[in-house]
Image (tube, rainbow, N blue to C red; front, side, top):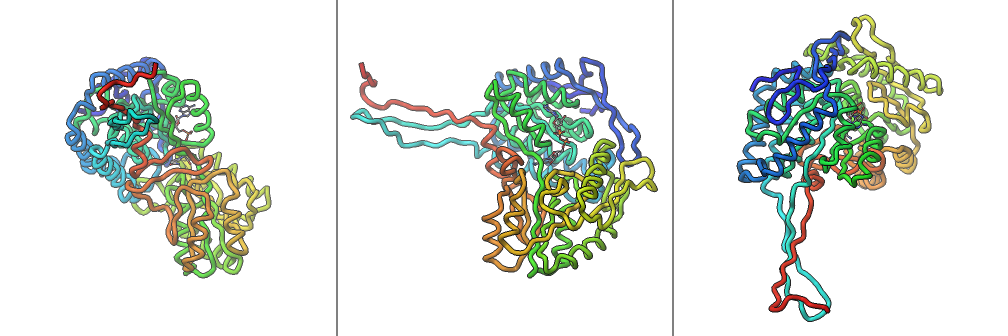
Length: 493
Ligand code: NAD
């Protein structure tokens, strides 16, 4: 089925938005509009939710043999792989992501996520359980059934235009839910490509709709009474608004939110390896990564050397358009994001941190949203650049004295998404792992994720987990079935 970029994918068909409104899709390397996408409104949400509810009522998806559902998810994975080249070109233009990174990770991992959850389809199962009731009448059979929670609203950000939707769509489908994907307005096209791939793979009509659109479409999904579950990835402030909006209906909500993750470097490590890890940990995808190691904590004795080597490596990064295979760091996604990052560079300076390198707009590269990757040293833990999520290529390097101070500073944040620890001392490494409040802790590495392992945040970084076996549970309800095996039915009165 051919994809129509200016349309919505609802109930297995490409349709125009009810409002007739369209979003501009801006190429961040040029600042120019290069495509348009439909701007879904409440009427479109209504149509998609009705289609999803009907597909569930008719058991179009859940009624299918589980191994066939599993094969459908594997076919989605294959469909993604077959379109790797087109998707990489699209995402590198739409998002500014370096094409080499899209080819290496964004696209293959999205496919792997579908393969992983394909394997979980047949693992959706309950238990038989013992049962205890005071008195003589104790012969009962008890079992639990796992059932899909219902229609799921899947709301995603722009930083990984295909991968973030795959983290939501794959577990929702594996659990037997029908879903409505609402991608970020900055990156609508990769999600539409996914709609096309799912339809070709055999996902029945209405089971997955894709509504491109802005915040209003997301809010309408959250407010809709027939949407039983919201799975959201995005900013912490938006997550908080969604929780509030979902509260009156006691909607099931999972949230993957922002971070200000510490990457802690002790003085016993190979410093060049740690510098490489910090570089990869922050400047990947121009710092627009939720788990970015944006607070680099370095032990005092190696602090100056570390900062100097990091400066050299950062100055060696090639900034350029996403589609250029020699680009290390692409533009940030939008003019708004550019202004936000520049605002933080100003804030860092104003608070007395030392800008070691970068931090200016790269006007020589044209009107696109290019920034010189930046390093701040002499950062104090309470400064805004050490507390707030910048979501750009700007690192804050903080000194620490000893292990106790490192853990205290690492935890001095409202966030708790991830952390890195660089040391050769096993006991210290494990003490720090235990001490740091974060959903993922990397030892002598950073950023690496796998579809098989849970990912999510402590504190204000989220609620629930994406990926791994834990990711399925929030899309399921547990039904306890109690069967009376006694000769006579219970009668208390
Ligand atoms: P955002 O919160 O602005 O938007 C995310 C999505 O929510 C978009 O689709 C948007 O249209 C929608 N939305 C906005 N307001 C809404 C509302 N009131 N109700 C329903 N939907 C609404 O985030 P962004 O700028 O697109 O993405 C960047 C953020 O995402 C960063 O904070 C980053 O840390 C976070 N992120 C987190 C993870 C994670 O796994 N924890 C992964 C990637 C990105």
